[in-house]
Image 1 (cartoon, rainbow, N blue to C red):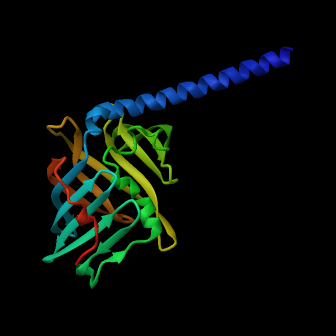
Image 2: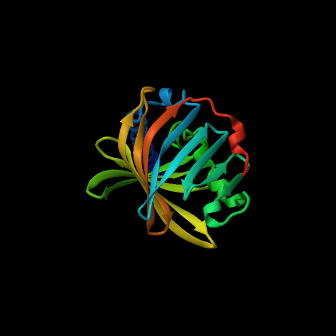
Image 3: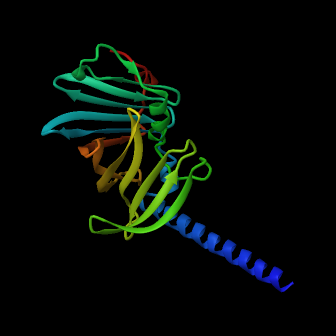
Length: 241
């Protein structure tokens, strides 16, 4: 009887610790969502068009990112007078980079389509993450270039894991790290986010990002303009020369 009581206390204690941990994780997530404008404002977003420039080895390239929530995303890059693009949809994707000698659009792999699905979700992975089938694990705190940050590991429904670092004071995302597969090998790539600005729609977005291009190499993306809920023709999510 005594042994059973001790076991019951142990189980109760373990469940209590689990509940506290889950509550702490959700508390961090909720404060992050509040910091970027709140779930209600983000759920009003149906499309986003980001216009800016990217610095690649000293050269400035014009870039336009167009996303229609859960329907398609397209990145247009003008380099050496040629328009290059990459398209992602829920079921397929294509890339066309004439600057690299491509003569026609090429489909991307099933693995790339699978890994790129989160780019279609304008609300981001944190909002309603449980309903989306994602899981989040709090991994304590870590210093990121002098900034104390909460470290959260989010695993999507498809199994893709990304580690997010949130400023412990502002709860804004400052860095994300994920492992990608390329040519049969795995590589850890990190993106950093800075220069947050509040848009008229009440949401906060980073206007500067260092985006991974290859292991050890990032591209600096500076956003000059963000247009919210602008009409988007779904035809742009189909490949064409």
